Image (tube, rainbow, N blue to C red; front, side, top):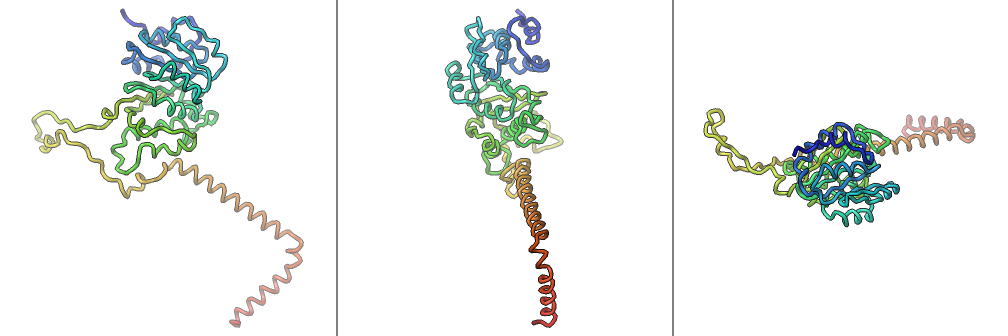
Length: 326
């Protein structure tokens, strides 16, 4: 039997309303190809009218559990005939809601974040639920176009936008090549301080890949041993152009030391430094403006005008003393 595509399931859906962009329906076919027939445990943050959970239950026909989470208290009224579907109402980034989600799904295979779209919520949800994602699992963040808008705590060059955070994860995938003694979590420290959350270093070693699609980021987890570059594999016999190639078979790549490379040894990423420098410049400008105002107030005061002749005489005396070296 030929399975219906996600687009077909959406086209024929008559139940609760679901809202997805067209590109998502196409991309999810590819993203979830390895999971579709498995007994997955699924979490969607942000369910709105609840229709997506109905459609996902038809897409993942063998799913064990499909959990939806939404902060809107009206979502408590959502009722489903499929016993595999459960809805948790509350803030996904609260300990209480996380505990309720864990009761339904102690481990997760698929996570979709379609929640508030605010940068702070996105990165904190990622940090909170990534540890529960199984190796081989996939975490998808939707609607990242919002990260370019100030209304959602973002901007094209905002160093703390959600999309900047996920761009930073691309460096974590390549951690073994940095050539400096930094942990994976070191380059996320600015986000941890900004949004008051943490991701354990061990959890970060499980990040296998980061993929960007229009308005989406797809993060996959694997066991750490599957995330390293591994040894060099060279096959064939003819090496008339580069005669030393076969000798490199089974060798490992040693990262070049980047000690002394100012771009590698920076404590904080340059874009985060810009924020700090802007604050320092604004503080300095404020101090200069205050001093200028104080100067203007003194120069315009009555006492300053009255003592002007005395100051003139004093300056003349100083000149005479300097001339005669007295």
